[in-house]
Image (cartoon, rainbow, N blue to C red):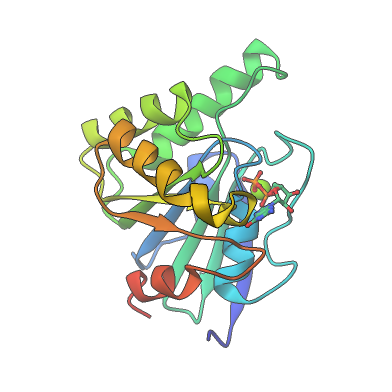
Length: 188
Ligand SMILES: Nc1nc2c(ncn2[C@@H]2O[C@H](COP(=O)(O)OP(=O)(O)O)[C@@H](O)[C@H]2O)c(=O)[nH]1
Ligand SMILES: [Mg+2]
């Protein structure tokens, strides 16, 4: 349970990145609508800290939340940019790359994958890119409540084999399952 969860800034340029004290940063990355904001809300036990939306692609900024003055949770926009203009796509690509590259404050990148949909081509390209940057990665299967209990292990096995990551963090922000495991990984 965290005492102070504070929205700091929605950054669009490097100069706005707020972490000048080099506190640990935990990144939540994944395509639009995969459940990033909902997961941050579940972790912090705040309903409205990170805005959630049923409209894909609404989050356009790198959003920083400061937790108990100790670490940052960072909500990074998805990469399903089909409905955006080319200029926007280029800009978002650059800011995400700028953020992820040479950032020694990043302690873990949680790559979110929809349990039912499985890893998309974009998810797997992003995973390759994170590996290339040698960032510490954890795969989070989101919205696991949408898959019946009898099919869950099949979906998780599919994510394991496509990502080649053996330990998948299975979560539901709605049912609050798997949330404590993530909190434990924050070392808080
Ligand atoms: N059933 C279910 N729906 C979820 C869950 N997490 C998020 N959603 C829904 O998925 C949609 C997108 O969630 P959001 O957190 O805004 O995704 P983001 O775009 O990645 O930040 C919203 O309508 C959420 O209510 C979950 O654990 N279970
Ligand atoms: Mg969001």
